Amino acid sequence: MSTIDLEQLAESQKANAQVMMTLVRTAFHGLEQLSALNLAASRELFNSTASGAQQLLGVKDPKDLGNIAGSLARPNVDNLMEYSRSLYDLAANMQREITSVMEDQYSSMRHNASGLIEKVGVANPISSDVFGAAMKQMMTASSTAFENISQMAKQMTDIVDTNVKAVTNATAQAAAALTPKK
Image (cartoon, rainbow, N blue to C red):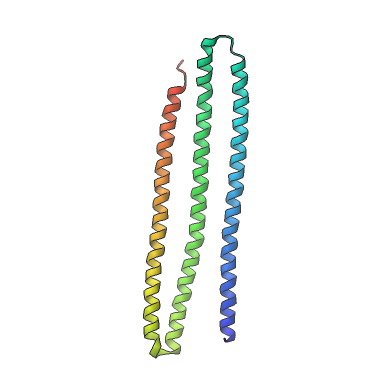
């Protein structure tokens, strides 16, 4: 193996390590955000439950119980909808960041493979035709597969987005029906 090959191998390993570190940082950042979101939601749930319990304990007339229970339901439903939206946004952002890193890595790999095909063609023109054709066919197949996977990921994100919006609307309508009319 020549010095150039060792240098290329070292550079390739360094680039792969950087990609892995970027993915790990992205995952940790996402986990931090998820932990903060869950902590805030837990705090809000505890505070609203404590407040609601105080209100329910202060009821003097049983007829008021239904009105108070209904008025307590609306903020909880709103908080649940906000939590769901935040959770969806967090997941969508993570998916976009990871997809971006993977697209960059794939682009770099494709560029390096093209350079390798050219090097082999210059170094050994007789065998390069078969090798070059096989490599180009492999690159075309992998490009098509990567594009299909990226398109499927985008479609899944769109489907989830549509479902989150539909659930949010349905929940808002249900919460509106629970809220007592004055």
